[in-house]
Amino acid sequence: MQLPRGAAGADVLARLDRFVIETPSWGYADTGTRFGKFLQDAAATSIDEKLADAAEVHRLTGCCPSVAVHVLWDFPGGGSEAEIRRIAARAASLGVRVGSINPNVFEDQAYKWGSLTNRDPEVRRRALDHIFDSIRIGELCGSNLLTLWFADGTNYPGQADLRQRKRWMSEGLREVHARLPADGTMLIEYKPFEPAFYHSDIADWGMAHALAKEAGPRAKVLVDLGHHLPGCNIEHIVAFLIDEGALGGFHFNDRKYADDDLTTGSIDPYQLFRIFNEIAGAEHERGGPGAGTSADLPVAYMIDQSHNLKPKIEAMIQTVMTVQEIFLKALLVDRDALRRAQDREDLVAAEGVVKDAFWTDVREGIAEHRRSRDLPPDPLAAFRESGYAARAAAQRGPRKKPEGGRYA
Ligand code: AFD
Ligand code: MN
Ligand code: MN
Image: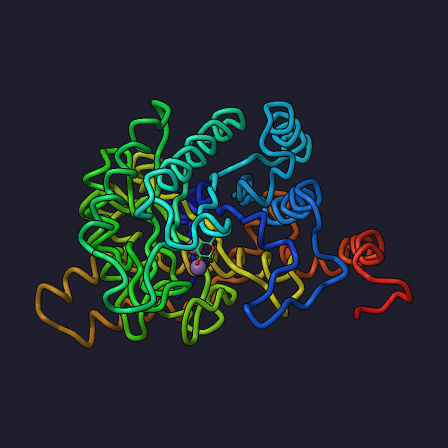
């Protein structure tokens, strides 16, 4: 099975060109696990360097125009209007823009017992004020997307009233929704555990969906691929949320055991394909690639990964290339043949239609298409040849090393 030629092929590639993937500012900086952090010389140490790295990914891939920001980590000046405008202008000068805004209501000591679910109304108010300020930052940056992840939860049975916490969370999210700008969308992200180890207040897609419906019509669910218990059928959740009109976005990564934030598709590319198969199937129902933007699902495709060992920009480019390839494969599923096989309960044929698309090697087709767009056919190879990482390491590395030039 090859890439379709003619009008069908042009439509599929046009859909691929409309498929943009947001990279996270925090993916370019030194991160670690709770067991420590391994510094990388070339890792970004400021929002300006993160934007520069994101711009390099966009320059080479042509599909990453926006950068997710983390309010406390990326606006060290406290988010003054001058700081925000400077950062937004810096992004624009680099050919990218600020994308989704991620408030941080989990690191401050005040949130030890929760943020929107804290039994202290002062803390709940503080968390809300921070989220409202994040909305302000978004408006000044020209971003209309707010991504909400809460570490709220408990570690022991009996620690808290779970139903009261649900009500506080819903009350807070309703207030957030009321503050959204007219064109704003809030994404509610769920996660079964970590950092809380007995219960998380927004533990699964059903809770996020219920809270989003209570918050208002512009609240949607964010599916982080690493936020599911082993064996979970994520593509079924995606299909259900699509059909509810509740799927707001993704955080792409991969996992072997938990929220490992491994590079997308590195462990289970077929699962990622099955997820995109649901997206492509739903878009086919809406008219498919030939119908143009009207068939495109209004979903934010974002990466959320911590590249602890892989070089950060390489890992980001690798991820973008993987997500593009997998989405293109899903667009190749022969929907009519699939439907005919399903209608006659021909399981083997139906599975064969899906697998034919998954096994299709689209790499040369994408490379050819990139050439036609004056993009490097292999963005990863182009990055490696560019010397960008070496230059970044030479500039940034010495700042991280104590006297003597070696890591402690
Ligand atoms: C952590 C959380 C969650 C959140 C991300 C960025 O698990 O995925 O989206 O940090 O705030 O990975
Ligand atoms: Mn996430
Ligand atoms: Mn996570």
